[in-house]
Image 1: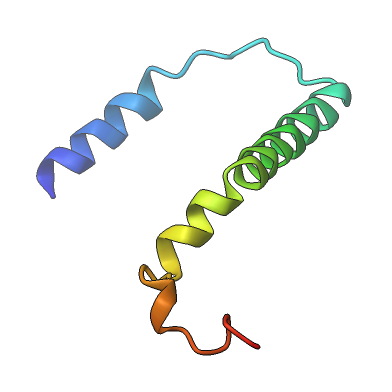
Image 2: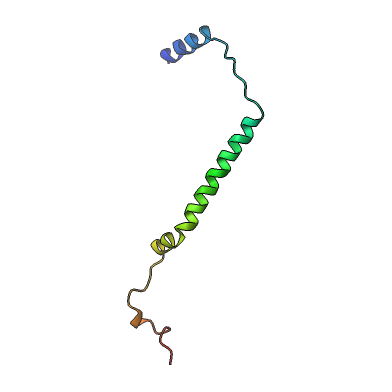
Length: 72
């Protein structure tokens, strides 16, 4: 706890002003970045949907045992 106090005092004493500006376009740029990332993930998920689905669904490896597939 003693170290935290000294770090806090150090950063409070030696503060310099930062001359920076965030214009209103920065928020829309970040929103576009997030929406583009989500869209990219959804496209990749759509491309690999069959592989993901086949991983979780158990398929019947022997079709001869399935009575519903052979109707006469």
